[in-house]
Image (tube, rainbow, N blue to C red; front, side, top):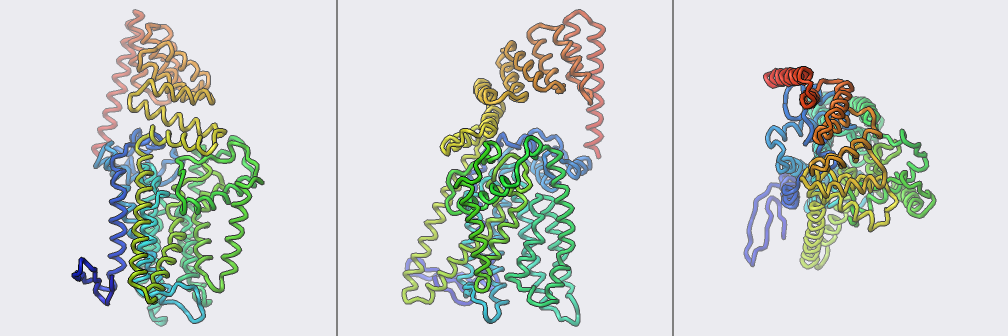
Length: 626
């Protein structure tokens, strides 16, 4: 392929096809190409179902997203029960439900489209960053990133395709509940591009005129886009620090006192929003009881060592994406020896990488900029403040991986530049293109394989168990229980009650839990095995005595067995414990009263049940009519 100004020539069996593309449009052309390839590779995920890991919380059993009205907006702005505050993510799920209902096809399609758009933006961002450095380059820099336009485009598309096709990102795209990842990344990347444009416009403005109106509008748009990213996922709070790193390299705004002052002033609105949203995020996690510190203090040393381990393992997975897991065990669950090689070596690696980045500062600022950006973007989820039970998660690398992928893209672009200057450029160029195509096919194949793992709950958690056994993680009881329960819930949804009983039984053997006993009891009841169901409900009540639903379920099982006095007692207990009147509780107790010949009491309960139903119907009608 030969490139001339404004023309791309493609050899085609001896003929020459000409495609006129303006030089200014080429970054958009290669970005569109990477986005289309990414979209095609992810098409198999359209065949996937919901999975039994937060999808029930976010979509399947979420009544709030089923109506786009004022009540929903107020709920999305105040909801913390999911452990996150991300109102815009709720809005995206509500729009999907409005269009697709509970058809997983549409929900997956939205996530794929966002991921393809993000791939477009990453490609464009990579090109913009390299071009910005080229135009801002001052005498004495020797970063090795000086390239002509074609290698720059090559570097951009390699970066974009690595981002779009890497199996490490499947979790963020194929898991419907991780919509917040692709959504926040979309606005985050747009905000970065707008900020780069703002700096360019401001530098082009005459100092006597102040900041040009166009630059002001661009700055405001960057801030608004950042805000949209932050209310999609709290990980966006690192944005102002990322901007400061960009100001240093490659934007080079910090070389003068005025540049440093302006750069800091520019960040103040971003920092304020970040601090406020960080506080909300921590409060939301605490409200949802996501801190294992409530169960057992995790030492600072353990958290730091696990953070270092995660930083290095993410990089390893970017190069060798094998044995990726939905839920990586946290060392907290097995009381680890922190001086063992699996924790000590990553800590040493982090220190060495940091030291080398600093040593190379005078010659190659790129390494330090990428490394610090990578660490800063991961900092909220490295577990220094531990949230959740996972030690690490593939989804956390969704945007932080852009930096390492950019390094690889620049390396390929630099190789292309050297090839163009060589005496055997045609052969070498063909070899490079063939190698890149083969690599893209291999990565795509791995990604498609990873997409199949997220097909449904049974497949997902079965893979988790297989990987745990393969890697010798049999001591991580908490994670194994989580996997068995995920399989059990999936079987319940599918109506495979015998299989559900087996899965919940395995989880109960590891450690009794009220929810697992209840689900197994429901499965027994579905199979008309009410004696076993009653036993499980009784065990669940002994583990959770304040749960009205358990008394209601056991009362219903008693009624099915013809034990109406026991049914009335349990249903009365459920009614007294309920903070909100429940029509089903009254209706079932009314029927039990009638079976006992207590017709007046039965009739009163039935009338109360109908009154509650009518009140609920009127309330819902008023809500939908608004």
